[in-house]
Length: 265
Image 1 (cartoon, one colour):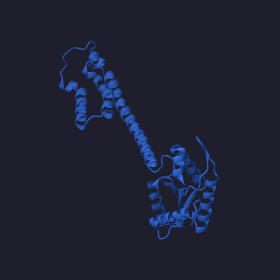
Image 2: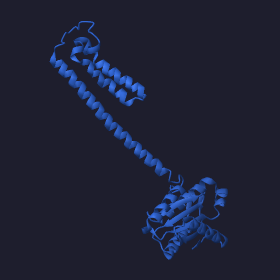
Image 3: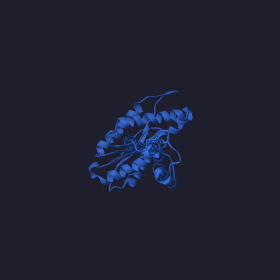
Image 4: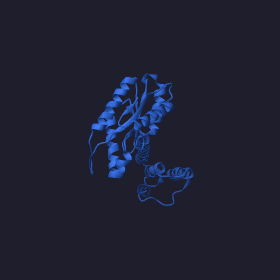
């Protein structure tokens, strides 16, 4: 603006206004009509000499100075190119951040917030993947339930109950593979899915998990406690996950009725 005032319109200094106004048009939250008005105003501004006669004589009359015309036009062009380029990089960066954020949200939607194990939503996806890829067969499921968990909550409080669930979750992670499903099924129930697992191998692994939990002393702010779990396990047949989980649930309650602290296979 100062250069235009000093040298007049013919040297093209007004073009530099593009550099200042273009970022506003790119970044600020304008409507479509507002953007059209901005662009139209820019075009009008940089072509003032065609639509507005000179109404004064510039203090430094250099209308025919080719050097200034070349200088201001190139500064404007470079400024616009740099602005558009930076805008492109910023948009790419923001898109990358948004993609990461969406991925994180998607990941967290599949995780139980307390135990950090998978939740039922992820379990459904896991079963779909296993059913599509037979290389993971056979799949063996086991539904675990913490014995007398209500008594733990009633005696020590829900905070201690949460500590118990977190400790169990850690033991389940330690005794399974990355390719297996370890899921908090709900409340004090956990579901484990062992891929490429035959019946006897599954029986051995689930018994080992049950024994490890029985032998673990859980330290809480109200002292040390010991707990046990009861489970029911079965091999998935005919890709019928629901029927297998129902079978596991039936065996779990069979184990509860038989004295708890055991895995029925």
